[in-house]
Length: 225
Image 1 (tube, rainbow, N blue to C red):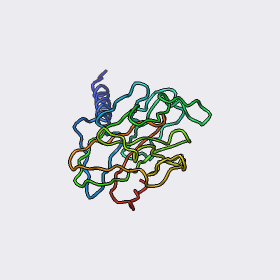
Image 2: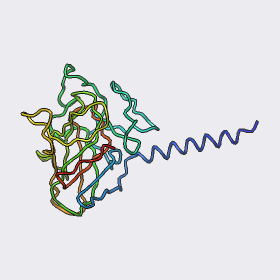
Image 3: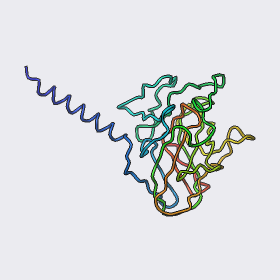
Image 4: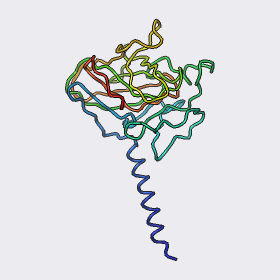
């Protein structure tokens, strides 16, 4: 029996899977570029993550679905831009009735748990409104914090969405007065041209993020795709 074609097919399949996984692996040298006041980044292309002991970000793609428990949600791959997304797991707080444990399944203080890091080159410093494309299935997986260059300004804390059960863009900040979030109150002030570091840190576990956009135009609204 000639096994060479079968063996070769296995090698091609394995090589293809390896290349696909590598495509969605962290890329330390990758720097995104702002152009005309717009920066668009696929969430799975972070260059590193930190403070990932209790909760960590996991890449979901056709080649690998995170097997982290608990995680009551099904895969959100259909409709994900670039064919992949990231989710912070495990997800133990799903409903308002589940225990809230600050420092475990919730993090009120930014930069203390599950931090993703992205490099971005800005030609045009200024105020940038933060849009994020997320898939939220309830009230306890729809918040995150955003930071810049190691700092977590008040304007980047408590990014929030109210859109559910589909990939959707949003840009709003949760406040004590408006729990659903104030539209376009979530922004970063980029003060220097050149390379800057954008960071996202966990607020609620189970948060699924597909892509983010920073826009200097307050009137900008991303396309739904």
